[in-house]
Image (cartoon, rainbow, N blue to C red; front, side, top):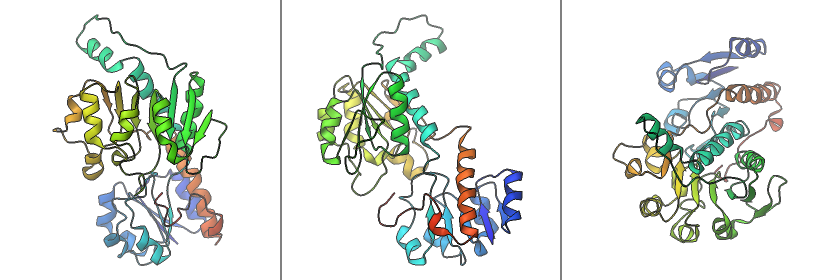
Length: 321
């Protein structure tokens, strides 16, 4: 059995896998994987969704399991993978902690005007900054109550915030004061001081936050998106930020960034003073490799033993996430 991976395992983990009869070929980049041709006879491939496309997969004659070390799978050719009966697994459950910490960081930066404060520091300017708010007593609307959303709610509670959320069926969760159904999104947006997007991009969620939703936002509210840029109508968002119709936003993702891998310098978002921009790094952190490896190695045990029905985080075809 052969594993080809662009995810970096420790020497001890590689030794553990080899002891189970798995040949491990570890490469240091996606391009190195593509150039190597090692994938042609691999049973398991860990790579980025940009690599795991149909033209690449057609050259992988023996692959039975593809794994991505991130959450989003909407770029993967799921219909093709389903036709071939290939198991698809993402990093669900490994991102909740770092992304929720990133979201709270963004909330604090917005509430404490950190961009302005740091600019004053760089300018050696002892200037007072007004307009600070406290998180305590505020309402955070978390649209998407999976691993990331739930971990965010836990941390928001520690700051004395009211937590409301949306999931697919309105089922109540202990980390939230109240859960709403998708059709009640306008109620959540109108009530929230912070609107946080932690849901996947699908055909149903594209432009989920459109002009109707922006009109309902409190003028003093903030929007945080760490999921996919296309969840938001960016033209409307840009107009609302420029006209100060909402207090601000913190964005880790953009439509252009999803297409290009970066936000172009000519993007109008760069020129705004009520926005925090981060380079799609919300899931980063020193604990991710350990969490990802633990789940992968457990799944590998099941795979080697032929118990694929016991593998976790297997993506369900047709759902889009």
